[in-house]
Image (cartoon, helix red, strand yellow):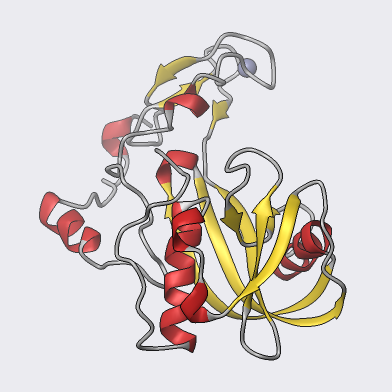
Length: 226
Ligand SMILES: [Zn+2]
């Protein structure tokens, strides 16, 4: 069956895309500075050279069953899909309502402030990843609670999941990934030293929910450049 026989996929028109872009930040915040529909970021596309199934050089082609170009194997038909990865993070909150942040001990964002978190493994749930990453990076045992938000970051090919979390045990300690761990009241977030735009948007959303009326900056002035 050729492409013409496939039901046409519904594609958003410019007006609809503009409407979505205007939806703002928040629980499904569009925390990105580049347009949608640009394909895989170049730093990802550069890695798609050979078929991981048979080793043949991949070609760019529109598969018969799809409406967009992919990296396709001309020998075995394997399609190297590129999908965003999930980064699972928490904002641990103390009994007095302060957020725990860490000063990053690794790149990207070395020396800047972020919430604990990391990539979701393929064999664990979101909640398990949130607990594991927070423990690894801070020494704190947390119970993930409300979802602060989901933040799409096209440049980095990630979606960052941010849970608010109750501290249930453990003890904060520096780790190779955390040069320093500190708590911050909602009106004392170190806005100028934040590592990532997704962290910026998540903290804004968290402060707006837990301490409405607190003055927060509109513009990211932290570490991340792209
Ligand atoms: Zn192949």
